[in-house]
Length: 264
Ligand SMILES: Nc1ncnc2c1ncn2[C@@H]1O[C@H](COP(=O)(O)OP(=O)(O)OP(=O)(O)O)[C@@H](O)[C@H]1O
Image 1 (cartoon, rainbow, N blue to C red):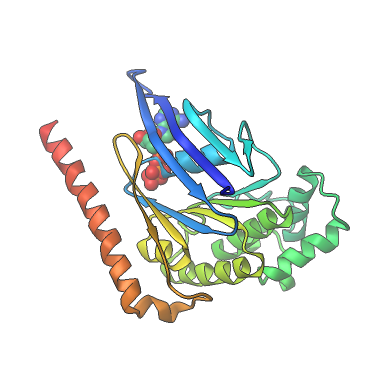
Image 2: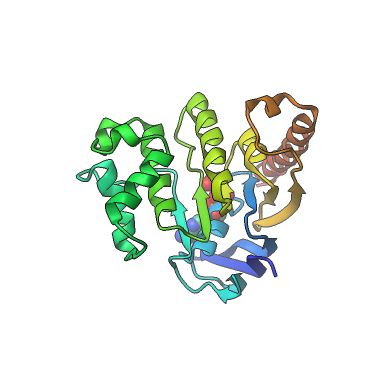
């Protein structure tokens, strides 16, 4: 059995003004194996975040089910950690204090909190900055703290919603490589939403391409690039082929969006 089993998933929302019900996600089925790194791409509004938040237990399902290790998701749980685009750190706590906060929230009982926090801070390369406060860190460093906090509780599944979306292109690339280095250690199952095609390919074992109206899965693409990966893989022929394939998907979505606007 796959670690994450999503079946016949549908999530309906109401439009804010008209109150009309629409499906943000419909008819989604997806299986994710333990230790797989899965990225989700698709044009804006196709339901990527909604799907991720559903796996986190943060939105109500209208239809279908999500199971993790056979257990139905009915709300947030310690088996899952979420990293959002904005590093949601407590400004009055130090780096160490923030990572400890995550452990305190989950009532961590796997040993000394301080030691566990420092272990994770060192893992993300911030050992020298453990006493710094969030305002003293760059955007990339703040996201490292966020990742350290998520990993500290040793979740079964790591859910990431555009975690590097607010960073400049170069920092983003460095963070991608760093994330893979960390992930290679114990290969947590990861679900990662991104707008960036290269990032989606670079990280993934499997890419979920979503389409709009309603949000659905268009294709699941297996990525067979060898691991461990570094930036050199970006220039390989296989990478280029995947890049072309994803671009074609997104271009198709963009042209259908234009058509809808023209008809309207
Ligand atoms: N709480 C909500 N209530 C009503 N509509 C919502 C809600 N959250 C999202 N939506 C709508 O659901 C659709 C899917 O949104 P979602 O954020 O999942 O898309 P996305 O693919 O992650 O978009 P983006 O790439 O722009 O972040 C959009 O039309 C969005 O406006």
